[in-house]
Amino acid sequence: MVRVSGIKLTLDQDESDIKKGLLAKLKIKEKDLIEYNIFKRSVDARKKDMIYFVYTVDALVVNENKILNKFAGDKDVTLTPNLKYEYVKPGAVSLKNRPVIIGTGPAGLFAGLILATMGYRPLLLERGADVDRRTEAVKTFWTTGKLDTECNVQFGEGGAGTFSDGKLTTLIRDLRCRKVLEEMVAAGAPPEILYSHKPHVGTDILRDVVKNIRQRIISLGGEVCFNAKVTDLLVEQGAVAGVVVNDRAKIDTEAVILAIGHSARDTFAMLYNKGVKMSPKAFSIGVRIEHPQELIDRVQYKQFARHPKLGPAEYKLSYHSPNGRSAYTFCMCPGGVVVAAASEAGGVVTNGMSEHARNAKNANSALLVGVTPDDFGSDHPLAGVEFQRQWERMAFELAGSNYNAPAQLVGDFLQDRPSRAIGQVEPSYRKAVTLAELKHCLPHYVVETLKEAILDFDKKLKGFALPDAVLTGVETRSSSPIRIERNEKRESNITGLYPAGEGAGYAGGIVSAAVDGIRVAEAVAAKFKPLGDGIYD
Image (tube, rainbow, N blue to C red; front, top):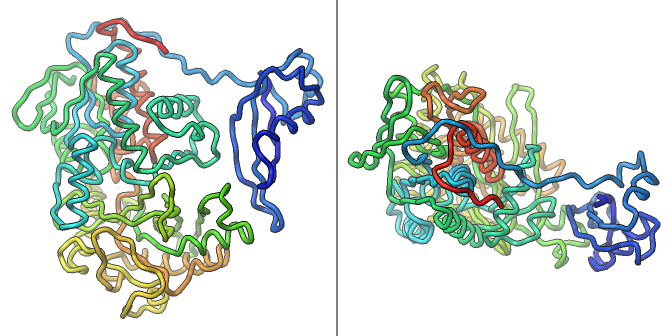
């Protein structure tokens, strides 16, 4: 097929007009176009008087070689690359037991899916509940403040991303990204994630997607166990021998994939005590900022705001301070809400979440400042965990020790004064907010950098420093505070132990975590023989 880029349509045009643009670009007649499909669609809003959809299309044409020769050197007309996922050749080492995967977030689920497809019959162990029971536990926490420390926004089927915007953008360039999106579509995600420039699923659809992936793993010979917390790692002569679940059940295995997520602090400690090499890692902390979605739409899309083809607008901003710190927006949720995301008793953690429709009144985003191991006050591998915990507990106490979150208006935050009342922006945080000065639950250098960043962002996106915009604290779980070391074969210093995904420090989002899970599954497969026959799709 021929890949054709740069086909533009106005908002008034229909996608059927892609065909006209394709014929015009290739200078061919309709009879010479056999079929075509959209590979990518993005939005070009750079011009004030018009917004365009820009398409990249794969076309099956008559005399393909003639067309390619005709447009040789034209970057907009190229041969369509082969994006089909290729399974690795299985290794020669025999397995006595099934491989075990700890965690059912994106890394764990996709590692499980690849291994199950190849005939390895993996066993997936999840400390939390299945996504339906998990959803009920989360709703209970948001309404009553009763936290289940084993089943919450961080722990349970689907991982932390299940209660998010379901954003599928990534900065990594890897053919496995396509495999992830294709499997998600097969599991019920909207087909447009395959070609949207900024794909997202939404928390409502994502819950069904993860269930369907689980069922696919089971249908291929895998097994998934919930409420199955791994409490010990069994090591013999420097190699994995098994795991212990819930302090009772011993499971023998020679291969363990660690896909534990960025908040499994007790598991981090257990692994450290077992001699698994790890190091502290830089991450970011800050707050959630909320604006009216209408304001963001108006600034980004001008007179085209709220056009039905555009949907709610997004933003992504960054700032480098003279003090050497950097601030940025992260995990922006158009038409979303701010949610309570604690996983430990006595701490407040915030996150953002949107449903697929993104139709809530507010836009929210994490507003974060980078911190490094130099800020942690110790060179211990788990020092970053304690650093996170310190600020989460201070936020908990500041807001009333009931899982309310401390909040402050942007205008008051910039002027270093308490907020007396909520203005035009109603906080969406589930459970509830308590007005407080956020400087009492954030490091001083984070506070000062956030102030600078807000003013800088207002120059780029007018209205960002809206005095009534709401800051809700604290956001501390943007990424893992540790990295579990692994070699070129993706094994840790313990033979047969494979750290994977965001919790191990090798990913930063749903797609990149899923891709890393696939990479680690490939490493396991390249070493060991399958236990049964694979079904290569």
